[in-house]
Amino acid sequence: MRHYYSANAIRDAEAPLLESLPDGALMRRAAYGLATVIGRELVCRTGGVAGRSICAVVGSGDNGGDALWAATFLRRRGASASALLLNPDRAHPAGLAAFRRAGGRVVETVPAATELVIDGVVGISGSGGLRPDAEAVFAGVADAGIPVVAVDLPSGLDVATGAADGPYVRADLTVTFGGLKPVHALGECGRVELVDIGLDLPPSDVLGVEPADVSHRWPRPGAKDDKYTQGVTGILAGSSTYPGAAILCTGAAVAATSGMVRYAGSAADQVVAHWPEVIATPEVHSAGRVQAWVVGPGLGTDETGAAALCFALETDLPVLVDADGLTLLAAHPELVANRRAPTVLTPHAGEFKRLAGSAPGDDRVGAARRLADQLGVTVLLKGNVTVVADPGAGVVYLNPAGQSWAATAGSGDVLSGMIGALLAAGLPAGEAAALAAFVHAHAANASAADPGPHPAPTSASRILAHIRTALAGF
Image (cartoon, rainbow, N blue to C red):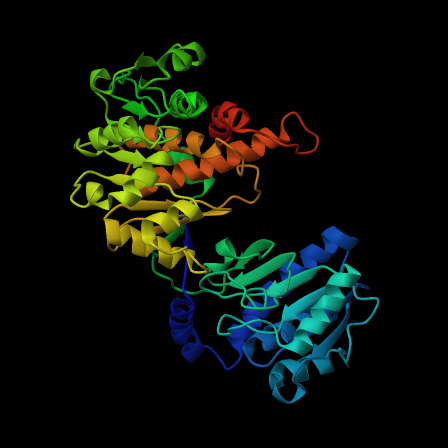
């Protein structure tokens, strides 16, 4: 798993190194790593470092010092280096002195020939948007189309939430040190590269799924498994008005694991026509034995839908609630108040507002955690960055989709079926939701890229068809 750390955790980990190393050594270590990454970027973009023109936009404090030292190292490799000091009286003294000794030039505007800009305005202790002078500089940089490398985080973004409270830097690449921070998943950071500076960081409670996690944890049949031991997923979805939701949700459960899927509802005939391997019945109470229920997509909010939701939540099985199920649950939250079995809710922002009484806001991690604690459930808050929060002292998973191809009608029905299949296979609720969201995003991106060479609009049906392709790639 990828770990994300708070600014305080990073500072606490830096403290013993700062005490044991010579003054300025840790900054130079970080800046050398930054310069190495920038050097690779210059090689990729321009073919080399020597003779290339870079400009560091420097704020006060250590972040500006990192930028000055990195520019110094690049100058020593033959780059033409300039520095625009936003607050000359507060520029990092040692970094500025080294920069001048290396032949770097202090300028008042970004030179027209600049091929790459380093954003060293504010670091992880900063708050609020860019000040007017910095905003003007980076507006000109953006207009000129000059690529930007941000030091630690794009200036103007909040390190904990990734939100922007005003103007901020649009970075093509962000280079951070020691450990990733939530902004690197939640904010617009471009590509993110992590430089190891020797911090001794403990495990974090904010995690991100990586391909190796899918390979290691996604259920695969063992030598002695049969269709029952791999988990039987029950689907309560669809209606005469929305049979497609049942087809998508059930099909995704079929694609996600090798066990069995049972469907109960009014779309039984349509489901079997699409997925003949599914055991389907129109009656909820005759569905048969399952290991987890998925309830809600296209279900309707009438008495039939409410009865299906109550039926699932009254069992001692894991239950995923989505779509119409969430609408019903928002009116009757007591239905999950005393559940001991895992419950997963998968709201988008509008459904979240109905459940919580207010929109998620900028702090999506905090909002998901509060709702999870309030209802005693696992919450998957949908968005370009999916946030999964377990209740109590549980972990939070962040899953940046990278693209927005999954933002299409029916895509959530596919995700629900995938999560339900993992719950039936016995995975913990938060992990099941996080792994499914990760694979779902990859399937969406793969469906948009098929057949290539350029991504094109996709659909929920195509995403479903690429679940196996995505899994095979891990």
